[in-house]
Image: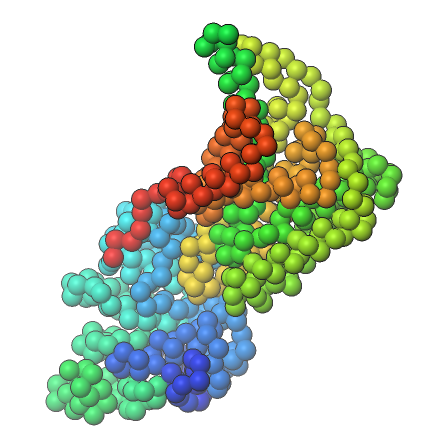
Length: 243
Length: 299
């Protein structure tokens, strides 16, 4: 498989302190699911924001073989990089349907309608409430809407930032089941940021462990199928923060 | 004079004319609120730029600059207003993403520049701008309705109706509402924030010109006429919470009626004081506007 995303020496700094992301490099193959794991403040979300172009960063990012380092967020969306932010960031005063329109803003009307129908089929929970203001949805439904909004853009790479945050275990399972369906049915690559190793393992192929803005370890999902190996990785790379 | 006479001959006409003027305040307020909602800038140049374009209509149709027909002069003035809005936004857009306060202060500077250009081109004299508004009047249950009233009402209904249709039912309107509420979400969806800001600035400029041209027939045109009119529009925007388009409409009509009643029954000399009093009262009682909606997030 060829690499869809190549990140080289990506660095993100806020102010004059230590960088939030410190010269990290990794790649994502077409159709692969790569997880970034780490405690709060490890630099996971900053990495995602830098890849999707909403915060300035140094280093190099290539997508589908072309450099995108200087591209603004909207151009990256047009190329197929879509970010589903932490905390959902849906637009509460817009209806569910209008939020989906927002997701497919760059698409033609026909293509957007087709993608919206696909998303509403995938998430029947929100399809029933398509004309309701988004702030009226439950937390799980809002997360489905946030993911659905990202999918309307027809991404090649979905950057999913803590989709399980604040959700009950049953809802987390439901959201990850849908992600597994999406993955199976399309060649969508996903970069998944999570603090929860158990749910991450259900979906991903590779895991990168972050601490203090650096990648401190890398394992394939296959290597972590064994419980002992998983515990060793947690102890080695995440330490007390994961306990 | 009986109570019914007072109602019929004083109160109803005052309320009616207040509503008509209020529609114009609403046009001005809608422009201010559109800009504030999406780019978080209070545009203090709104009145002076609208004043400059009203003078342009005068200059282009009276022979001072050119001798165009009235319609052609209005079209050229509208194009100038759009160009000025474009220019102002292009210059301050880097500030908009850095500091709301700095960009707001920058608009004060553009207001002064617009006032200076008006003085430079047209002088400080008061001029009359006669627009071809139908001059007829008829009485409905004792209430005098003029051609001017109906013109203002028709223009306001069409303009505000068209604006609300665009905001509520088009893709651009969805983008405007999304950026107003959550610019980060809009950006990650691939929207060009500057384009949507520009839509708000240009629309506001057009609303300002329409309001300015329609207020002039009730008074005269001087370098401060439209800026003073925009002060009432500002009060209307405050009553609406400065972030609600329907609130601005209600605020404009309320300001028009209240100002009329105060001027007639209390004192025209203290009308500005009364206006400032309304602003203070509205900020204290309805800090989020008269149409404040109960809403929020469930999680």
